[in-house]
Every structure is written in structure tokens, then in C-alpha cells.
Length: 165
Image 1 (cartoon, rainbow, N blue to C red):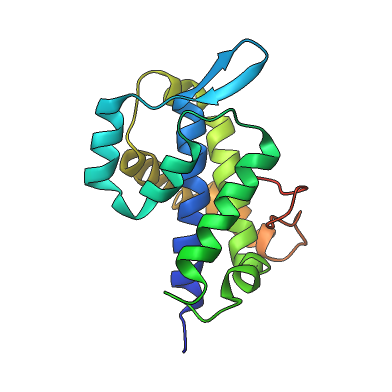
Image 2 (image 1 turned 90 degrees about the horizontal axis):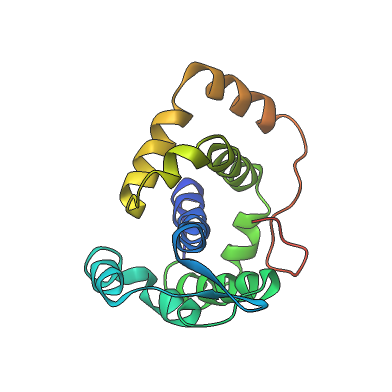
């Protein structure tokens, strides 16, 4: 089975971006723990708009969350939904090792950090996040940054407990 690397980068980075979006809007402090709490109306909207992510949503929702647990759930979702059913087995790890994937995720985290105030102004749905990110990515300064990042080694985002995501 052949696959398109750009498509794989887009799909797999989309899973990580979606999980970041969930944590951004739905994480709550409860005592000493952080818990993902997604209201019923938001769950219904996610089911309608993002059915491909609902298994991940259900794994995360109403659960105490740690960084390691989040990483494990995202990785479990990507491997079970993409390695074999969508791409050849082993593709998830191979794609995550590519510079294209690393740059995409690095840029996404830079975008989130620089736009946190804007994103906090109200609840943007995931499609809007994607739209805003893609528009930002097309800007001239970001294009220059992307070219620079593509030529230098980046911290590795991977499915392990030392993941950066």
C-alpha cells in the first residue's frame, strides 16, 4: 500500500492539533488534578463535525489528564486508526520522524503561543483554529521561518513519554 507523505503529515498532525484544541478549551482544575470536561452540547457538535476524532474525545473526556496520559492516548488513537486502516503499518512512526511533520508541529505550537490571547477571547471551533493557523502559516515571515526550520534539526515529537506536543 502506497501513501502520500504530505497527506499523512496533514492527517497525523491534525490528530495532535485536535487534542491540543481539546486541552486548550476543556481542561479543568479539580483539586490536585487536571480533568478534561467536555459539555454535552460541545460533544454533540464534535460528533457532527469531527466524527473521525470521537474515539479520542471519548478516551479523554471526564478523565484526569497528565502529559504522559495525553501522549499515550493520542498515540494509541493514531496507531489504531491510521496504521493499517489508512496507511501501511509503521507509517505513523515513520511520518512522525519526518522533518515535514516536525516543522508542522513546531509551527503549530509557535502559533498557539503567539495567539493565546486571541484564542482565549472566545471558543473557536477546531475548523476555525485550522483556518487561522493555515492563514498565519502562509504569511511571509512564517514562510521564511518554515524554510529555516526545514534545514535544521528539530526536537523530535514522537509517541513516547518525552514527547513534545
